[in-house]
Picture (tube, rainbow, N blue to C red):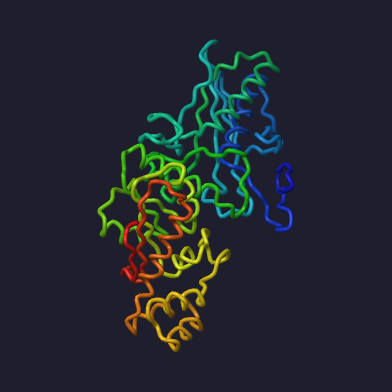
Length: 373
């Protein structure tokens, strides 16, 4: 990946793909904090403002808002997520920095649109603003550097806010994780890699952490909201035991391998779970395909004759293969669920997690079920 700066319309691109990378909310908040504190110490806002990221990159950010008044300054940066389909793309990230008495240190506050942690299990204490550890570290480092250079004390209150953040947060995992009132300020590298889905995978991990902290002994990884409703009906799990795994079955399983919960139910569409049964851990259609030859072999093991097995092998979709078997009383759904469970157990590598699988059709009906093992 080639790294560069972003000023105005210039953005770096990913090698070979032509996709533009972007910047995390944490990087934007850090840039806004540096601009605001610089203004407090020098009476001038740097524009663009350049920061140093954890791996040494030095992007620059244009300011979209600025205000200086006495011991307080505010600067704002518009988040550019590059070519990633990020819900926070275009959001205005503001940092208001207020001078504090010497010895106060650096304090963080949640402004409008930034959430507050209300449940244990996250990397922040309950009651803390949802500004993650790495962005906090970046902001502290910028404050310390500016204080050394301009003769400040480095004692400040930093209030991060996001315009419309509370509304944007409704389409994220935050409410389920117990982060209320807005978005989280995220980022470990400061860079958003297009379609890496790192934020989604991080949310899966935080979901496991929250469930463990709440003492949950049974969690469910679901590929969508329809399947969550099926799991709720089947097991009456609380909301914080539901993991919106999307296409990232591997992310759920590898994290539970290191941070086990006694029981895991995987619930999703028949076609997607047939991919897991065949050994794929990323279930997205662009990265794995339904293997009808594999389904034909499972159907044959379940009692399908040669003609039906050939029909399944030549089916256009996983659903068509399933329907052919259902019409002849062949339990292909159960075979897929059992193989998906076994594949999950293989990835878990002996971790103390009992797994069962539910395969669902588009109407929300269970079409395959495995025994817990």
